[in-house]
Amino acid sequence: MSLALRAPDACPALVLNADFRPLSYFPLSLWSWQDALKAVFLDRVEVVAQYETRVRSPNFEMRLPSVVSLKTFVNHTRTPAFTRFNVFLRDSFTCQYCGSKERDKLTFDHVIPRSKGGRTTWENIIAACSGCNIRKGGRTPQEAHMAPARKPHRPTMFELNERGRAFPPHYLHESWQDFLYWDSELEP
Ligand SMILES: [Zn+2]
Image (cartoon, rainbow, N blue to C red; front, side, top):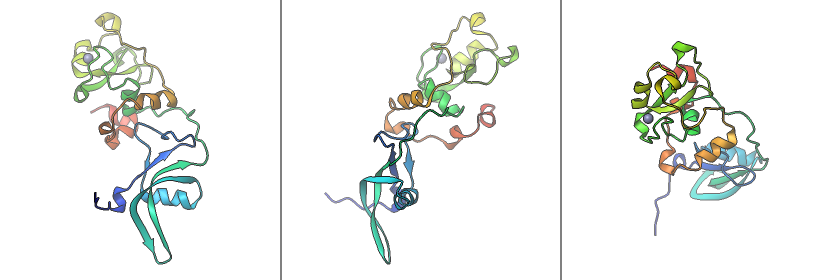
């Protein structure tokens, strides 16, 4: 079997924690080949696997790492950022009212509507399909008789990571917007 060599820019390295689990599952922790090499030279990672692709300079040649592991364990106790992406991930990309998993119809709902003092927080924002969003309108769950499947809460990094493991690789390419600040993104 002959495989064409990948160009270096098509050679991201999967980054594992010191326990050899991905640093993050969703989005998958990947570094550019430049960042991966830098970490190798700074002795911050072990090379676990390599691509066939090599980079060369006059006094140096090396196969690009395809998997690296951190030498120091990174603890996932920091709190996750409040982003659209992370809210979707917490809610498993599922409408919390009807259970729909139609991703292109997924949007957000203020459980307590803003008109009734509901805030844009982890505890008041859930993933909801556009149909449920319209149906619920400006009503509270009690008024609309629509209760979220799970009470919204601030997730831990561990919880988000565990959630992310459930998603197959074709879900891994997300728009960068989902990682930006919540307030610049919520209002269309
Ligand atoms: Zn729904």
